[in-house]
Image (cartoon, rainbow over all chains, first blue to last red):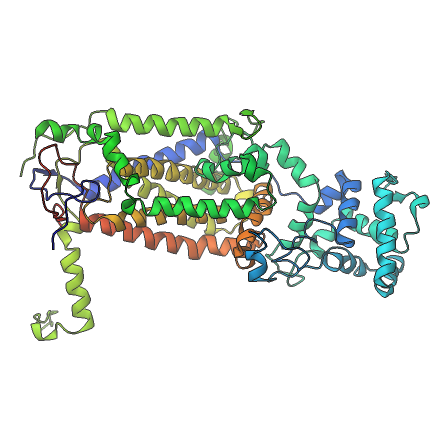
Length: 317
Length: 67
Length: 225
């Protein structure tokens, strides 16, 4: 069975001419050139290495922001606490008309922010019966009582009733009662400033560990990490996905991925990430299946850039 | 040997320091915002220039051909 | 008296064996003169053709510098100026890798390099591109510095929204690092190998026909195939 010749899909057999070609020599020359170029660029520009941020740095530089974030972890209103899958069941997550792929897959990285980020670390403090006692009191109280204490503390924060003086967190009593909450948050803040919270938050064995999910989520819930990123032009609305710190080139190949986020229907959507994931899937499939897509696969022939590439061949024939 | 390498890599740390504050080009309107670093812009422009040069520059070849 | 190695003669009766089948299929599709040619079509005469081998070369430098970094552990480059230099070469070779790969992609697109039953060559090339982006991502979040902290906390939302985040946790440094230095280099390596072998098997795509030379019937014979 013969098909009609389609110039965007088929080729005619090539009868010649041929010329000498040494594939190994070509490969060797290319490797040496690229290796020299990479070395030259490294000598000229080096590479960035901004030190990692610790929770200790956060607690020291911005104790109020830290304490405010810790409170949202305790009362379950933080970004992580309300995230939904894969961390917890407290949110639907990004969805299309109610269907959330994340929720469908389920909670595989369980995090209870109140316990994991606040109550458990504070309960491990040695020689601090006031702090550990406060945790016991909180856990023994009813949910309604906990909610009242939490709401009062949040109200104090909202009304600028929280301050940091002489190394201590001070909350204005007029918005209370706070029960054990003010003790817990103060102890948590001191723990952060000492560096003990960094270690306490790391998942897995207490000695060796390589999983930083918990401290990173806690950091990301505050504004300290984001503030540094903003200064380095790395945030989403700064096309941060493409950028590198300083004047280094970043990941220019991610231009289309991040461009979608700057378009208002997506940038204003709560489901932006899901939309972009699907759109990039469609675009990637488009690229993958170009050989089979009429019109798209005709662009090379229509634009005639090939006439430049094969000009010698056309001159010869 | 290691000490010598270490010395050279410290001296040649970076001839050009790119660790200073980045420079950016940006504009936005109500439906789209555009923000690109000069570094990335240079890389992209360079890619386009290199592509065009690759198309137009003559390619040297040996006289032996035609078999 | 020394015994010399002898190769048994090939017997057609053995052709049903697995080894014989694989050997014969290999020799049919990728004979030595295709794997290591010394001739190529005269139409391969443009600088655009160097970007494929340039991409492979950049990948070679990425792998060599990556291996060097792994010799002394993931913290080495923070502590040693030699380590930092090797990291710089690793980073710049990655930039060169994507630079040359994209120029190669543009060139192949405008040549419509999928013609003549070369669709799989095009598709494996695209998969190389996508796999490299994922491999590069795991590298960026393995840096154990501020950049890694920021990138991972932002990227997690993209992965989580699709459900992938439950299994591919950008915040799990251990997982990202081991994927970066084992699974993904092997995956990228396999797809790159398939792509290169397909190019060797099918040959470089011929030019578009000059007007008036279009055959009436399809023949998807390829030059030198």
